[in-house]
Length: 561
Image (cartoon, rainbow, N blue to C red; front, side):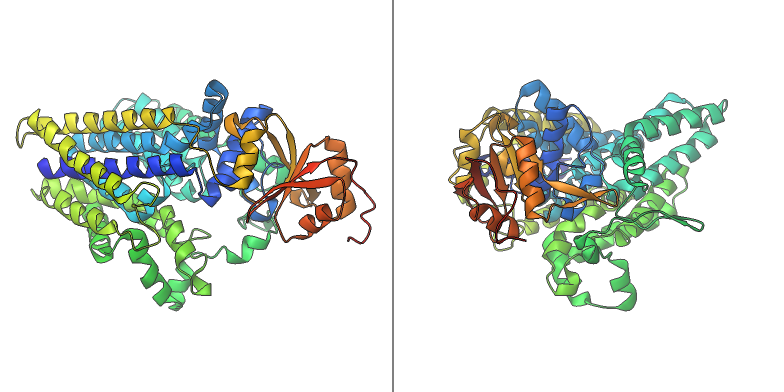
C-alpha cells in the first residue's frame, strides 16, 4: 500500500508539473494547434460539428472524429475560455486512476490495479504528450477503462452493459486509432451480455449497439455522407466495391509498424526509439505486458480471459495502425516515438491483466516497486522527451516530486497500515490533488504574456476574420478564441485541397470580407501577399506571417501563377 501511494502521487506530480509548464509556455503540441483546438473553436463559433473547411487540408485531419474536441467546444461556449483544453487531460488522468481502482476492486485487487494504471500514465510518451496539451488519448483510456468497470460489476443486470457500450462508443468517436480497442470492448460487452443476462438478450444487444452508435458513430456517418467513406484515409472495400480514398500528400508517410517487423527492416531505429517513448527499462515494460497477456488468456474467469484477449487485440491493432512507423524509413525515430501513444490502450489492458494475476498469486507488492523504477528512470532532462523543462525550473520540479512523497505520507498516516481500506482514500486523494491542481492552473489562464510576435498580435485583436494557410491555426485565435479563422480551400473530388491559384485566393479574400490573412513564410502564398500592396505585414514568426488587408486585393495577380 505504501509503495503504491507514493507511486501514484509521483505520477500525479509529474502530470501537474507538465500542465503548469504548458500553461505558462502555452500549448505547443503540433496536433493540438493544427486541429484539436481549431476543431473545438470551430464547433463553438459556428454551432455545427463539421470541420471540413477549417483545418489544414494537406494533412487530411479534417475527417477525424472529434468527441474530445466537442467537450472542449462545450467548455469554450460556457466559459469563453479555451482553458479546459489545457487542463482536461489532467482531470481525465485522475479519473483513470479512480477507474483502475474500481476495476481492480471487483477482483480484490484495487491497490495493485491503481499501480498498473499509474505505470502507464508515467511512461514518458504518455506523461510527455497528454498533460497540458489538447490531445485526446487520455479520454480514450478513461472511456475504455470505464467500460471495463461497468462490465466487471454488471453481473446479470442489463443496464451496465448498455453503459459499457456507450463508453466504447465515446472512444470509437474520439480518434481513428481507437477503433480497434473500442470495437474489441464492444464485442466483449456483447459476449458477456449473452453469457450473463438471462432474458431479452437481443433487445438489450440492440440497445447496446444503438448507444455506441449514438455516442461515437456520427463522425463516421458525416464522412460517409460527405466523402463516401467513413474513414477516408483508409482503404476500405466491401466485396468488389472499393470506397473512395483521400489523396493527400502525407499518405506516403502513413506506414504501420507491422511491415517493418515482418521484413526485418530499420529495426535499429525502433531500438533507439522505444527507450525514448517507454523509458530505459523497455524490457521490463515488455515483460510485464507479455505476462499480462499470457496470464489473462490462461485465467479461469471469462472476464480475465477477455481482458488478456483485449490486450493482445489492441497490440495487434497498434502494429497495423497507419502512422505508427512514420519517420522510421527516414532514420529518425522521433515521430515513431511520439506515435507510440497509439499503443496506450494495449499497455493499459496488459498492465491491468498483469495486476489481477499478481494480486491472485500474492505478488501485488512487486508491481509498484517496478513502477517506481520505470517512472523514475523515465525522468531524464537530457532526452528530447523529458518531464523537466526550463520553463518550470529544476527547483520547481523537485518541489513537486517532494510534495508527491509528502502527499503519500499524509494518506498513509490517515489509513490503516497495510490495510485494503487505504486504496479508496488513495484514489480519492489523488483525484482531489489532480482536480485542485487543475483548478489552480485554470485560474492562471490566459497564460503569461508571450514574446512570440504572432501570439502577441493575436492578443491585440478580437472578432476579426482571418484568411489562413498555415498548419497551426490555433496561433491566431487570441484570448477567448474570438477571431474567425478560415482556411481557404477548394473542393477536389469531394475533399478540400489547397487553394493554389492566386486569382482564386484573392477572389475568396474579397468575398469573405477578411481583415487579415495569415500564410506560411517562404511559400507561394507568401509571395502572392508580399507582391500585392493591399496586404501589409504586421507580424511574423517561423510558422506564420500575418498581413493586414488594407485595400482591395488584385485578382489579376500580375507576375504570379
